[in-house]
Amino acid sequence: MTIDHDGALPVYKQLANLLRGQIERGELRPNRPIPAESRLMQIHEVGRDTVRKAIAILREEGLVIAIQGRGTFVKPKDEAE
Image 1 (cartoon, rainbow, N blue to C red):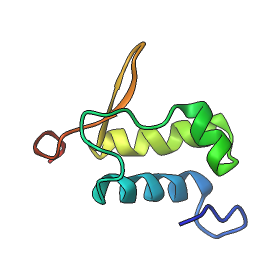
Image 2: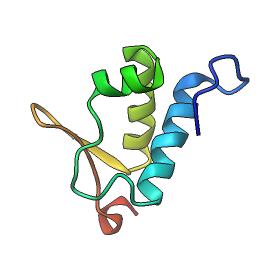
Image 3: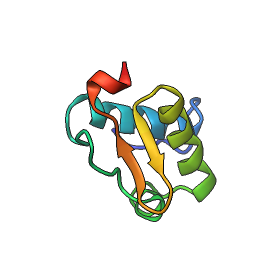
């Protein structure tokens, strides 16, 4: 899935969907960090606010956890439910 910058769905929601799919498929693994904000910005050609909004959605859904000074990590499935 790629980000459609001209699509009807806001870019941050598209990015959240993309990352959620990677978590569900095991491409982003439990207890491992997701890519850094700067890397996600570069890969998907989006701004920092977009990345932060997408990650906030995943945090609200219980899929990731942010650890200050270390990054954002995928929660294990038993903790995410």
